[in-house]
Amino acid sequence: MENSQLLEYIGETKTKKLQDSITKEYFELFHKKFPAYNENHKMNSLVTVTDKKEIKSIGMSCINDLINDNWGKMIKALISGDLAVIPPAVDRQNTTNNALIVYRTTDQFNSTNTAGLVGSVIQAGSGSTPATRQDFNIETALIGLPQATFNPTGDGSWSSGLGQILIPSQIVAGQGGTIRETVLFGNWATISPVENQQYCISRDLISPIVNFVIGQTINIDYTMVFN
Image 1 (cartoon, rainbow, N blue to C red):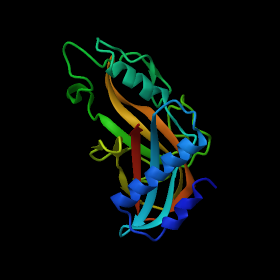
Image 2 (cartoon, rainbow, N blue to C red; image 1 turned 180 degrees about the vertical axis):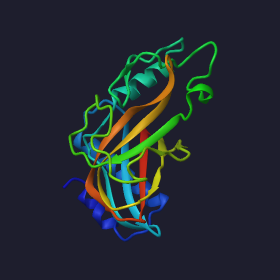
Image 3 (cartoon, one colour; image 1 turned 90 degrees about the vertical axis):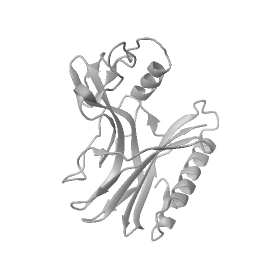
Image 4 (cartoon, rainbow, N blue to C red; image 1 turned 30 degrees about the vertical axis):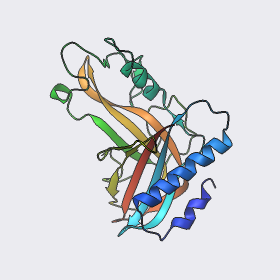
């Protein structure tokens, strides 16, 4: 079992300090396992199930999980400085889209005026196939509502000292289940056709697996690290 050290936190209270400590440990383990890794940008998904803030079950990203190609293409487009179209991004329907324009002379990027909800969403699932940079969707969504749906993320926060962006999400379980994977999606608007689709940014296998029952709170906290 990967990340078995997390089991010692069961029964503790979920706090920001504890979350930061676990995230720090994850990236220390990552760099220890891959000392020659030349990419200083990675994500970690920490999943906790709580009851009155007490941790009942906990798991997080496997060490070798990968940021998706879509996110690399988005960053490339953001820094290009021209009327940039993201190199073909693949949405969760496995459809390649060439109309995600980051800079335009008319509309704002990712405008909600015509395409509806934009931002980011998180989905949890039970798939166990190893993650790749080409993943475009959850493998197996959870069963039942609301845990099976795309869950909007809360307000993200940036820590300059840690070089981290925190992307939080919470779901109150409508029935029991098991989480083995999570996916962070960018909800991005297109211009042709005018609509918004979900684009996989990071798919993460979760270990240890996280079990939950009806009424418990599922916390999925993605941490995006730049160092």
